Amino acid sequence: MITKRIIPCLDIRNGRVVKGMNFEGIKDVEDPTELARFYNKSGADELVFYDITASFEGRALFTDVLTKVASEIFIPLTVGGSVNSVEDFDRILKCGADKVSVNSGAIKNPSLIGEAAKRYGDQCVVLSMDVKRVDGRFTIFAKGGRENTGIDALEWAENGVKNGAGEIVVNSIDTDGVKGGFDIEMLEAVCDRVNVPVIASGGAGNMEHFLTLFNTLPKVDAGLAASIFHFKQVDIMELKEYLNDNGIPMRRI
Amino acid sequence: MIAVVDYGVGNLFSLCASLKYLNIESVVTADKELLKKANGIILPGVGAFGDAASKLRESGLLEFLRDRAKSGKPFLGICLGMQLLFDKSYEYGEHDGLGLIKGEVCDLNLDTEGLKVPQIGWNSLTFKQKDDPLMKYVKEGSHVYYVHSFYAKNCDESIVAYSNYGVDVPGVVRNKNVYGTQFHPEKSGEVGLNMLRAFVEIAEGNG
Image 1 (cartoon, each protein chain N blue to C red):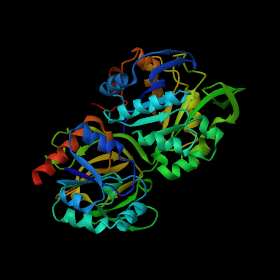
Image 2 (cartoon, chains in turn blue, red):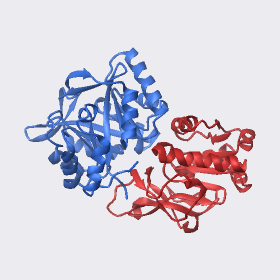
Image 3 (tube, chains in turn orange, green):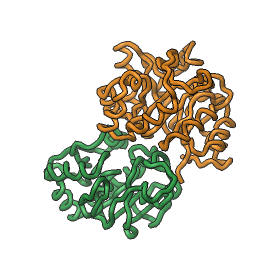
Image 4 (cartoon, each protein chain N blue to C red):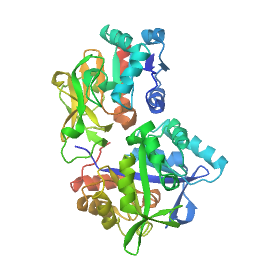
């Protein structure tokens, strides 16, 4: 039986892990390779790295970190952040990533998903979207959640899949950092529109939130979180045992 | 030494990194002398069956690899490389494979109603054959990582282990010295590394 996935997300700036609250107030946490090793041993089903570096030097540091992680950790790795071209896909995949996550890059260049899917396959292309309610409508935000694009999130998801996105990460800005639970309403709306794996992000504060997510929305494939794992508020191994005991199929290691 | 066949299909970073991590000497090559010299051959692959089969044919490797495999060289196909071991695939048309294992590769979508295709994620293995040397270090029920839209069919006698995804998807297949895994051992954590280790032991035993 296929399992639900638990995915820790590591934001990397200048080769170090950071995590923002509501995308603001970033503070340094730990060394990315150490953290990746720890998560791998705890049973993380996949790792997501977001490169939030702006500088050329920072980019090079990120590439080193990724290569190092991919040389010793053999679970799926997804990389996002500043992915604007097929060349970015190439650079990231050559460092050992399996999937590349596109966010603002797909807004700036609407043909990016299609081009990348054609070259590397749908399974390589993840559409990550930052979504916020604006006047009751799910709306796509760009630039780390700072800019309202006015794009309808449900249409965006549907078109992304049509163009070749093989997975969708739904990050609810409304619930991100609040730790009050995943945005069930938003996730359900996306799940109803697409038939590719949907990864829930934003809002997890405790183990029950994951159970509620998978019980309420069987179509959601994975739960993603950052700070609650980094600060060990939730232990991945314990979380997976808890979910397994409550009837949610989990990978055992 | 293990040879990983280089025919311009897919990303070999993780496979090579996992062999290196296991301290296994390996080379990525299309050179027939090196392939002949190797104790075992790994055929990787990601992408479409038709493209991959033509690339193998164009590089003159199709017949060569078939002969090596038939001569008893330990052989492991991974993902699309596993699908290429079969007689035929129906991915975008009809294409001939290496014909090393009886069976054909069909669209998962046609047999899994209501499930998402591709199958992406971790699925558990049920053993159909006990005590296969490739599974020496793997416990039944272990999870492995799949990413695929097509799967092998009508190959009952070659199934070593399978995973259920609406239908029983052959996960590990074998015909004598020729093995295939539909999932990615190089992405399946310890379980996958242990299978690669077992394959190399098989290769060295026969080498």
